[in-house]
Image 1: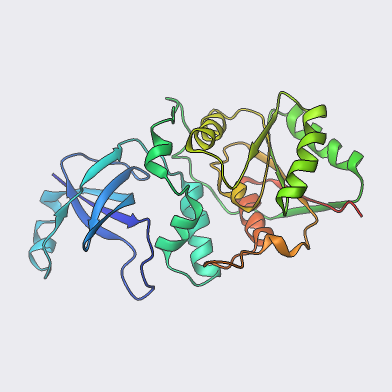
Image 2: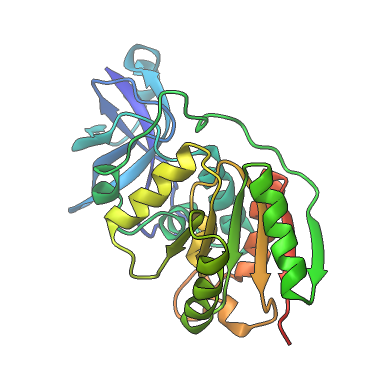
Length: 271
């Protein structure tokens, strides 16, 4: 038996513990996904630690609550990477929201459905540690300079995020990028299906050179080989999340993503 700590993918107040303890018969790695009972409902959660029950017996005896078993193991493989944990911690501290809400914001809404379609390679680098790097930013005011930045990344077999503020911008620039980079371009929409998101995750897991064009949520993809983030119209107010907490700004999060991957941020202004 093992005692695991889990971050529930739901809203927990800042005043409550963000990691809850459960027991399971399987030794689960950090980043595994489970279903857990939480009060009167069932929710998904991400495993952070796993310790043999024999090492926790004395501690458990002192607690005033009964340790519950996990309801179901959704994935015994590490699906959630150190990148996601780092970004969730940043979001939690920078915008003063609970870690559970930050992680819930970063991950796809229907994570169990997504996992059914994932094909994690044996040589996955999900457990690789990330370190904070200095943010490198450059501004360009021509499409030719933007293409040059993209070409440099693809030549090195790296990944590019083309971040756009609105769906209208996404439609317009998707057509332009399709003509120039038909074999590299992928799209992420706000209503993309679990199958489509899993397709993107699978490609990123294998370090495939890609250009992904998308709105704010594209920052949360499991980037593994990112070298360039191109931000169209960086002052556009649509980069701010106004409708629900956390009220984050994508351009600030982009700097954190870039620093974790030692990627370059390119601001492209087309007027």
